[in-house]
Image (cartoon, rainbow, N blue to C red):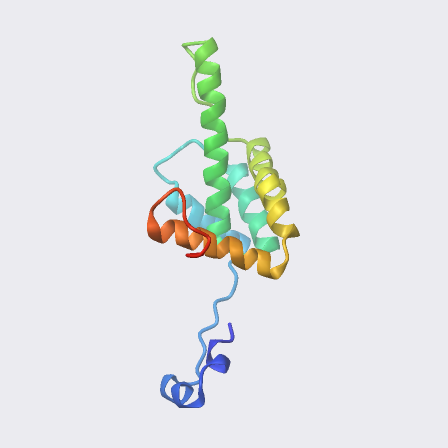
Length: 148
């Protein structure tokens, strides 16, 4: 992040030039964090958490991404369970497998929304972000483009 370089010299001298660098998490660290977060929930196979940690560590090392993947895998498993429950009332929740994790990863990186956002130009992205922030701050379903 280049915040200190963007500030005026008066302000920079007051906040100092020291930086706090956050290193990306390694696969074993991510797996340990996921296990500690999910210790009360025994729905994940051990190999599935291992796969999430390795995938995220190779791409970014961002723990938020691993939590998003596990959340999406749980949502997919829930949807499967509810669909099966309609057909078979005695259906039980099955564990989240490596296949479920792969499906969640693919869905998160190859969804239509992601593809559209990747194809936008810089200013188009700024408009989308401004629209999102305006919707969030006004807590309404519609906003005027003048406000955006």
